[in-house]
Length: 147
Image (tube, rainbow, N blue to C red; front, side, top):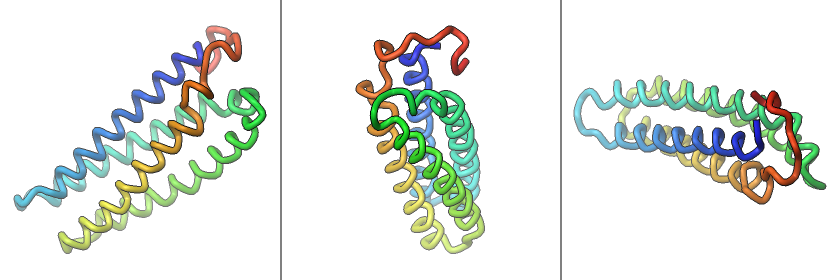
């Protein structure tokens, strides 16, 4: 798999995550009584997408990041640390949000989580997924890498 293909795949997952963030936000804005159920369902889909993305990102980038440039080792360590921390934080925040009955409190909890997820995605696109970082001309990878 080419580095550009890895980048495209991961950025596509970011687009999916952004769409799910918007879906959760839309569910929060719903004034209908089924709004809480819609928020719960959307949060579960968002958590599933985040889990899938983090696993795939680690699979594709773990061995690649250290060899990219002088910052590669730092990027790899940051990704490892932040993924573990942010995964635990998002799982905990989603569990809390799913258990909050008061609509205003639930909305505040979920909106804080959505802001952090959006910030995380934006940071990844600068730190790991930028075309300045992931470019095909840095390495010649075999077709089986990251596949």
